Length: 484
Image (cartoon, rainbow, N blue to C red; front, top):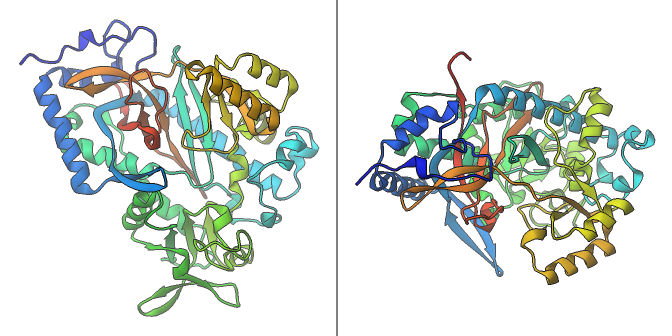
């Protein structure tokens, strides 16, 4: 069987992450493309099957909610990596640090003086109608002044090669375990790929996460008691909760495993009795975290947890209330926030956005629904949005009614020509659209992962990359080229 002919890979209309429009590999991708070109279709298929077997053997799964039931599925993975030159990544890294620094200052301001509203930088109605603003957090000073300790910012590249921030995830961002496991699987099934290029590592993330969490401990100790708080096995990200707890060597707990005493100290039930907890990496949404402070019927949290946090007896990451900045309407103001808090211009631009709460923007959106992507302010996972060019007339009319009824809850953006990357189907590469979610850790220092989770739309021409809606993923390489 002949080797795969990569010169027939055609992608004339989009920026491709590995190949130029004439089929010639980009500089950082040339070693990879040379190796892949030496494989036959049969050999590539064998490697793909080996990756699928490794994923099943390693138990890498995610949960899909469907018609009232939950389904565990093997993690969908494509073996052809996505490559970004280290020279470009250094600019991205600086831009992500800039962005999360401004967002943390913004959140801290909202829970104290709200000067950003008084100065007219953020309209008061945006804050007043924020579903993720938590009055229970007013006046709290978290360690290091940080609220969003773990942030996942989604990046997309347009047809001209420009990288944009598409959205910020500051509540309980997920996906980092799959970034780490993608690298493990690639090393297992394509070890020769790591013999040539200078691929920067990602496996230091669990150690960095542990150090950041430990720095938040209210008690001086060489080994603070850290736990990962999970909603339980039926949560879609449970695999990640268990994985990160295991990688950090800390306990994985549910709300019922914790108790808050009369002195506002959090303890964990163990076989040896109660043990004090210093830091909680919580993967439970705000409203279910503490039935005393939020939903009184929640069985996922622990009564008194907010009291313990407010009194400084335990640290929580991410801090409750951080989701006030995890709002697609607030997103549109981030360039202003960077200028306001840091007196800097944004290093990475936003996607141009229209806010339906503004009459002029709303009229434009309603007149151009067939051209735009419309998003609700606080949904995630790709749910609840309208991709105008691919929607039916009835779907567009329904969205117009929703926008008119609740304009604050909707914003719109142009339909971007998302970049593509070669993805294997029957042993041959085909272009599929991709995005990227890097992860930023904020503590005494700020760390950005070397790359992130590349998500890929496995359906031809689809722009939906979310795994919950049929997307897959790729290993992401940050590659140093000659002379760097």
